[in-house]
Image (cartoon, rainbow, N blue to C red):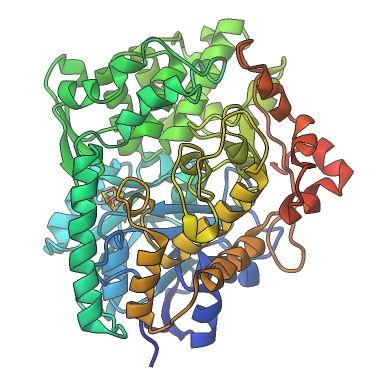
Length: 612
Ligand code: SF4
């Protein structure tokens, strides 16, 4: 008997209309744990390296791990994987809310969606009953309308719904999956892959209890840890102010994207950061299922009428990409722009990056009103941003080009536009500045999906989050390369483990849960008394399987560690270290197998991006 897993994957072939259940052996779980690990294995073994992300052969994998369904803190998280239409290589994202817990409780460790439905459809999983249902009535509905219509129609208040918006239907390459109105599996355009398969939504409800090794112990640990984390997050203000509080500290540590990375600090940061954010947007903390932290923001705007809304408020990444990145200091306008992205179903990081990039191109005269359908795209103008986002989600005028993502759009625009795009392998750099954070820079350059802060927790560690159990005992120094390679490797392996487990990072970062406590919970769930290095080995295995450039059957091609970012403002000349060709010299000091793999291949640095 395997504890913590069902040993069962649900596979839905939309072309064949076939629904099957597959057994998974215990050995596989021992090697890959679940979540991103299982997804990595399926993608590695089943996807042909040359397939187009929008072809019916591509697959979407939504996976849980031993954590889900246990009520242990952070069990709301789950992993989504596919070949990304944005980067043309391995794509991974994560969602929360109630979807993963319901999928697990329905009796499945993972759901694999393949093929293509003839008509727009949705999938309904109600424990053992699984149906593919026609969804023409949801055509062009935004993600929140889709949620409400389906929830009413299914007549099940506990059902969880992962949906795409119009952007996913229109194959915007950074379309996201919107879960239960307030969670977003944003990165890599997996929403567009669902759109290409004619899948508008997946609704799931489950009420089974996965078996665990020590049920009483798991219950006790869940109760204790939830209480401890709730108190910790409440005392440090995380529950009250959430991630929006990070804007101000990011500005103070030269870490904030400002004017599409021209600057890294901004004197207006306070206006959009919490606590101002909390007060102006009348925030109420909102929690994913069973979460003791409640980092999500429920906001309400009455005035001005054009920005009126009630719903999910922007998190740090959205706030900075739609705010400081576009020089917009009106937090209500940013919240409205965020709501539009949510409804259309677009990743706010890439959508905000597209907007900042377009503003710079407009300012330089590389694009004009002729391209934009008469719209001015000016720095600092919230209404310009809102109209531009609508155009991107609907693929209108310049929006059609920007819907291809910054890297492809820059190639089309030419005139030097390619030089200003901040991306790694086509994935826009998130709101943690690699010019300030060197471990983060290495992580971006070598990450499994491109520039990502969730796969490799380097920004948190560089801001002082410690993991003494794996030798990270003191906060690293800013603008000093020493020790950064080691931090990067450890944090990449640790993240791969967390994303395989699957646990929400905020239980650790903001919630105060230690690795030792996670191990104790893992033991109570699975019955496996593994030391930390064994779990880190699993993380390394998963990371290595996903490493771009792996040969064999992996779908990756043309490894490209290109880290492209504009030069720093004069006050931070150290950033030159991180300007493309500077990367190898930065890393020479320490051995780094992941990087050596890249840098032994001289041509890699010069190679074009694999995007086609
Ligand atoms: S911390 Fe935030 S993202 Fe994580 S489970 Fe809780 S509410 Fe969801």
